Length: 180
Image (cartoon, rainbow, N blue to C red):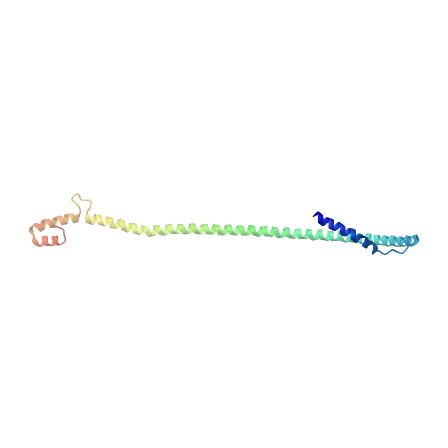
């Protein structure tokens, strides 16, 4: 690293005198010419400053009018946005009420369906219960289950067995039905 820096310094020392020889000498300029040229430069600079000040003034006035126009546009934009937000809020409120009404209607329909199912079940089961009670009543009446001697069928079989002791045909029939 130090060696590279050393090489660069040596190269600069070798090329510097050659650069000085490449310069031309300027012609002699008198003080009067210098003063005239400075006066011209001063006048040009003053006119440039006046032009620059005039342009800056124009830019400031344009910026003020632009700012005022921008403010008025922003105000109208804010008013429009506020109106849109109010409309959106109203629509969302309306849609919430609509959804609430639809949900309430659905709940009422479901409750009505459950009521109909319960009513239909009751009307369907009621005839079946009446029929079963009637059959039970008929069976009790026909079989006389409440008799202390047994049902009518038991008494009938016992009577047939008594007859089978004296009548051989009845005994054969009772044996064929496994009642003897």
